[in-house]
Image (tube, rainbow, N blue to C red; front, side, top):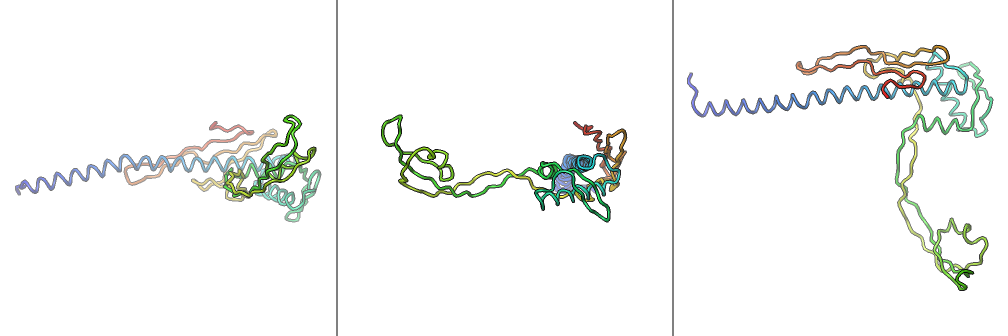
Length: 244
């Protein structure tokens, strides 16, 4: 069958369109796979950091590491709850959990450091109502009466030793950026690798602990032409991270 000029043009356009689509696939699919690999790696390392932090807090209040991650997690969570409920829950205390009594030592900064460790720093915008005062007072330096503008909450800092007269009071609103920690409570999901769904390896030896990835090599086909590949996400040994 002889191709007409119109058929040749149509075939050429089809080839061009298919080439463009193939080029898009070749460029963007590998990038998406790399981002997926990096996403699993970041999440896995984040979980390993939290596993290590759980053990560190447990050792801080008990005096040693615990090979049972879930027990260690429950104890430090209970200690944090007790500290929040009772400001006097410091020093040598007892925690009763699952019919077991744990002798713990809680220092005054335990709750704060728990919240900042198991928390994500964030910012919010608060609307603050300020009241500004215009006052008049006699200035020895000027040998005359002077005026000043101060915030109402600061008035005692400046006027404790002088007599003043209130001239004007004005309320204003302003937006203020406030830093805070969005705290979360460690749970059992931290113990599992998000990619392999296997538990992390924890080894305790000579008063040191190592938390490591359970992955050796994972390869999965993607779109027949590409491969998702992941190797070990690293380890934390006695506080030192392999990826730093």
